[in-house]
Length: 178
Image 1: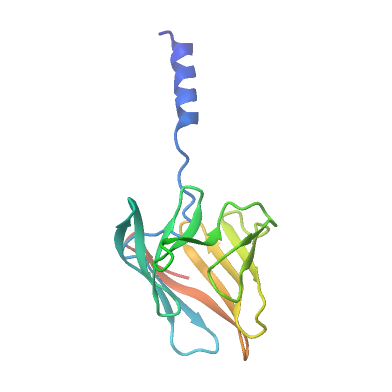
Image 2 (image 1 turned 30 degrees about the vertical axis):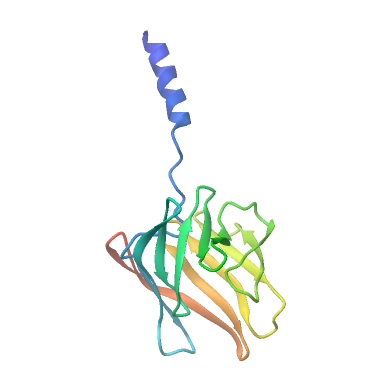
């Protein structure tokens, strides 16, 4: 092969290589995020506890903000999905690659089934805006930042909106303050 053919082959091969994952929610055992809300004394925590293999796919057992343990993964379409043990299927939480402004059905919270991506903020951030049918419960919005995860979450409560903000995280073994 001559030099131009080698260079062309390298360029074509590089184009065929899989893209690096976006990691808007880096799931790795040991990762931990701590959140505080102004009107709450106790912090809320998300922590990746362990992995499980279901139907040949790796799922992460995660202690979620509400205290429950859920099985999550980010699929090949960059969607955060939960494994529903009762229906034995995936349920969509967040579609990180949804088009800006596109509405989609989310099952992250029963009172917030409608979700919409907003990419107008920082280039490495995705904001998800939720809408639903409950006047005193559900999600309003979440912000995910690449290589960090969920950085802010606003919930609707009967006393008004509550915003949880990320204050510290351990991601890939590295402690970070926010």
